[in-house]
Length: 203
Image (cartoon, rainbow, N blue to C red; front, side, top):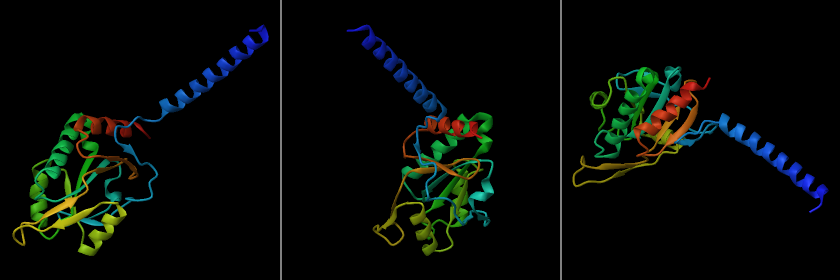
């Protein structure tokens, strides 16, 4: 190989190394979340619901906090209590920053989930968590469509023993009320706590 070609290879290598260095630097600036990063999504931007205390609620009410929102119902046998228990554990893992976490539970079964029942259900996990419900079946359907959430009534042996099939992930909003992450069911409390810490570090 000639000296000229050798110099070309060295120069090319230097350029490639520099480019990779720049890419690495860019990658280092972007948080590495465990959950799915949905920053900039054009859905699930807000809601108009009522909490279990009878207060109208929207995302604006929780500015300054990380909001984790989950759709479920109180008679859910496994997914819902597991998800809410994990969220309570996330709050503990955050330590002092736990005060900056707001858990929200939106019922997909308002026919059975009365405000008193929702309030009692939240008390099983954390007294600061709020359960929310839509004013009518039509508004719940519209909300679910906007949030890309699936739910369906599955008939039981009696009119009141039905179950609800529903999506099992959680939406995570930053302190400015912007949708940032979608976390799948079963991801675990440590992973979510780590993601929330990253969000809290951002301005």
